[in-house]
Image (cartoon, rainbow, N blue to C red; front, side, top):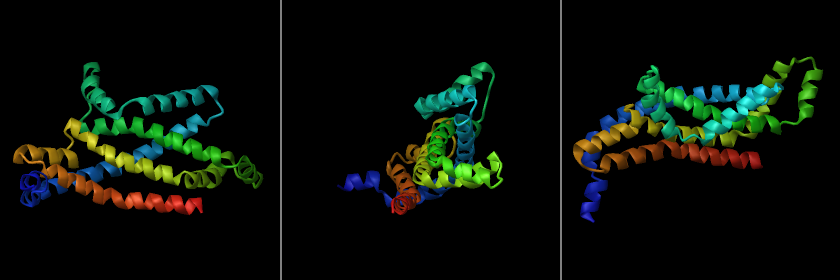
Length: 221
């Protein structure tokens, strides 16, 4: 039992590596600040294309959503980072992550938005147009707010998954939380830094889990 505690819950090692992991956490939060708006805005663009009256645009967006939802994000990151340089396209680690998550997150958010838009009764849109609103104004002020409300739990759940997926950035040496914890593990020859990183993720995401549960309960009522 003592060996188990020393290997996984060594408080002395955790205290020593805590500053390094906190710097990694700050970079993880920075990635979230970059990636979440990119995914949300990309999702709106994808949704607009998927609900377009132009058939070619609609089918292109549907193919985009299906393809990138099926494409493993880890493979995508490795392909962009290690494959594109052979075609003369070189992105830094952060640029690689931004492009990869733009493609991946936009497809998921786009499908969620599309489901939300389709859940809004057509009669409300027609009523909004009858008051003199243009199609764009009716969409912005009537359709989109209701659509977001209807799929808010799904948006929050997908955002939480996006935060967890930032750990994949460690594969291209982005100094986020997991990369910092693995670096500390390799220096200390101890697993405690990885356990500390897991606990930090838990503290970071547990409030979001409870928020999602409350929102789902409120909407269900």
